[in-house]
Length: 231
Image (cartoon, rainbow, N blue to C red; front, side, top):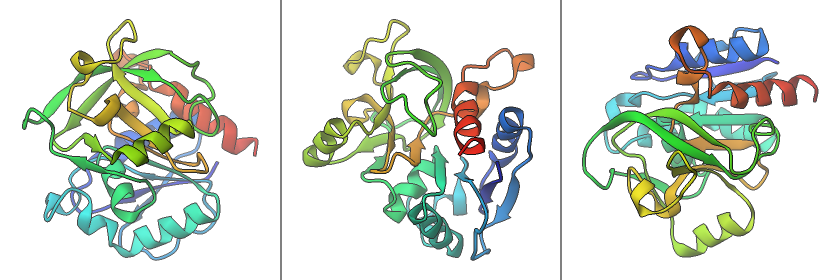
């Protein structure tokens, strides 16, 4: 599996993401600078977390209009798998690869903690190693993670099975009390209509090293490696 991790000024999670991908696939991804204009030959492209361009204008706005994101859109249109995590999710919504927007957290504070996620869509290439209703615990670290979309868009996401993760508690309960940032319908991650573009606010790459005590994020990366290596 040949993969690329995109690097913008202000990105700070590219090495963690590269480590997670290498653990799952056995191959180190390329780190691709934002000024590049082509992404040929990749099976997976990842837009990682951080504060691209210092979050000026709004989170992901400047990165979403960068030359490399035009190449990411072209790759996605060719069927290349694309993963956006945290700031990467924000950037994917700015480019139009995913619907909706990420707003300021409802509590108006930066949230940095472990939270529980409930898996809803368990399908290749990202989540076939999870089971529906499975609860995992991973970290979040964001100020603008409050997912918003209008009712029609939300209903379409629900009806098409495109909601991948929701915020929940350890028992899998999804309600207002388990919604840490105000996201509509507790949404933590969604896919596009093809299922090959995933955006999520939590950081699965933070939970991929047994030496650091958590491996709950590994099934996502193992799913991608399994799906794309065998494709």
